[in-house]
Length: 414
Image (cartoon, rainbow, N blue to C red; front, side, top):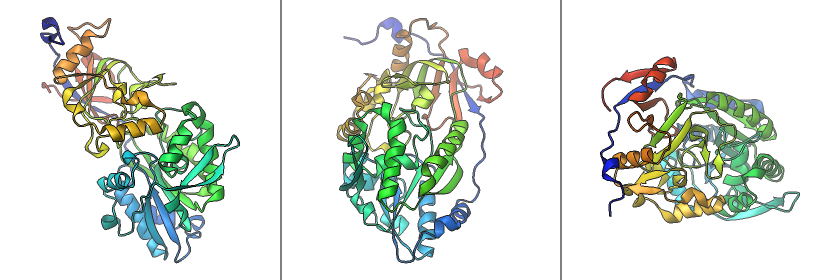
């Protein structure tokens, strides 16, 4: 039995154009010099004692230049006489296994060979304290063997909650270094509590463990490094809340008002913790994203998984349609472990899978009331992390021409 009617299969798809989206492009010219200068601040380098073992905590998010940034930090620590090593700080990612987490970091160019230091990826944790309502706080045993713990994290809006701090240094301490067991336990409380719980748990970890400072990274709208700042542990909550405001101002968006079908070429954990960033598409598995000011997107089609996600298809549940090829690429064990640990099983639900992009797009259009099938407003993006260029259908041409931050680059069919 055919899935689509003959009428749907004959539905003409519009001509597509390409436009550049213009955002603030300020970025750092010299990462090594920036990190050297930040490390040289007395309140930072003064806490690094020669011979000290330093755990550099690195996560699983897609951060531009993360290998270069991590190596530059390691070199500064070595120059101060310290003995750094790397600890994956990514909660349940990588299939919640030591091998999987080390493999994820290696995919980012961070390994014992490239960094010249050990990578200790054990999933074992120690309970270092409890919240006021009795929730245990887990921290990686490998990290706790260090004389100093230094998280490296990108500051950005979270995909599922709002608070004074969201994704960044505090979350890396509370969730990332909690490994699978700690991550799972905190997520059982629900995202509704994270705005208060993340800074509280991070503060308690700082009080109970040798967290010295963190390297905070802010990126511009083109996924380029805009700021790197060494932040003393005592200032994590205060400074991170300030950097979060900066990150929100720099964050990109799709510069259109109303989209019938958004086609996303790839999703993945390296792109967003949610696979596709709700801050871009306006959706969460619980419903519309609070405070979202981007375009109204009626249907979403996902075409693939990023290479670096290693089969983790978390976020596929946010799509309405996908293609059959993606199904064979899903690592269900990794996906399921991540979704269960984050208390978000809806993120793994599989949308309707059709033969190819054209079929999925046609199906999406016919399932969207109020859309003129002869003049569909379609946008295609590489991912929610790469919005420097978008493809758009001809019915959007007039709106694109009115928007000064959109520059049409190609009038030929895409």
